[in-house]
Image (tube, rainbow, N blue to C red; front, side, top):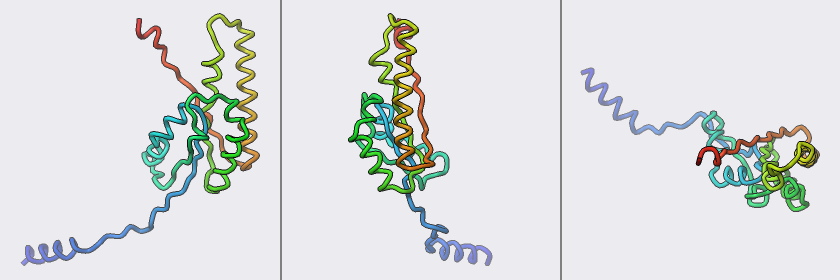
Length: 163
């Protein structure tokens, strides 16, 4: 008798559709802006994967080919076309509250060399920092209170590894 009741329960409950408590609505929370590191994250949807892994599958990122450019330098992000697109995306996506900014590394890669004096390196560093500050201030003027996440750079030392 118990087996018959169990079998009937399995048959009855297996045909019942299960509905989640609420429908998950995806909303953009991160604007991705920057150089090749941003470009790779855009193409691989890395930020969406990370958000999902940390339990935020309803959050997404927004970017495009104007905002995430392979080889971009700080001056490129300061151009009117890029600033206009940053403002456009922030206006189109009012739920964005974080800008993931990956910029500055190519400024050093394109301008630094081993024969530079410490003074020249300091000048280059200051120049990049001033431009970075300008970019951050622009983004904050578009949306006061927005958080800026500036990712750092970690370059592989191929010369020592290969030899």
